[in-house]
Image (cartoon, rainbow, N blue to C red):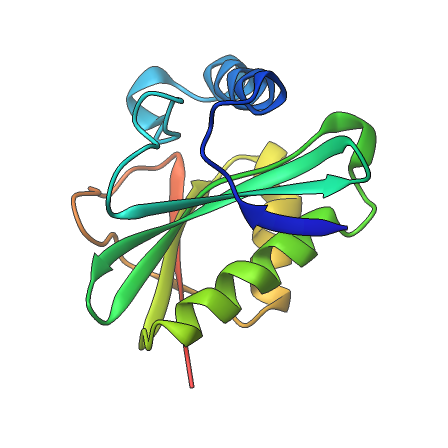
Length: 152
């Protein structure tokens, strides 16, 4: 698997992000969907990564700079055909390493509180993320959980 910075111009990445947003809107109340669309991702404070296996797009994730010492994980998604094959772990490891390279003290995220997000929460917990209160512009929301990881 190869993970690289992505400029968001490819058709495959547009399709994966559209699938991601549609799925979030299917299972989450609109006011609790915090996923970014393809128009919001190209931002100076967001670095977007895609993961490929040969020519196949297998997943994506982004790192948003919140401050000079902290970041946020955004847009984590594994293509349906590649779920349960370690794609999300590899993308998460890549984002954590990038956050450490930048000298961040911590890495934060928001994910869903409902059962459909149980595997995501388990993944983050395995990588040392702990539950926390809302951060940044997030507000307390029964459909969201917030997590943080202290970086060495």
